[in-house]
Length: 131
Image (cartoon, rainbow, N blue to C red):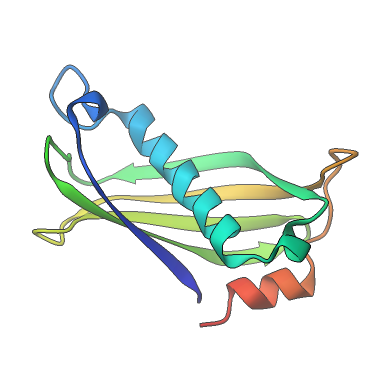
């Protein structure tokens, strides 16, 4: 499957009261990398007239990240059916390769004008599930 990677470094503003990365920040990073993958990989023509919205997030936290940790994020589409695709995001501590979290998000494809669900085209499915 085609995947997309990004590396970030934890800064003070990412931390909660326990000096770990705040859960809300992880969700923001999940959304950011998902959008970046779509915007960088899909052509303007492919993106025209459609938008993605989140239906569900399921996150399994395995370990905490702290200040100055370097996190390698990876995302890919696990499956698509109808108007819904399941996107996986994994985050690892780059130094130790320890899994920090794994998430599964269901995204629904909408018509950008009507905001009604629209079937994911074969072109999009093939593009995002091909190495």
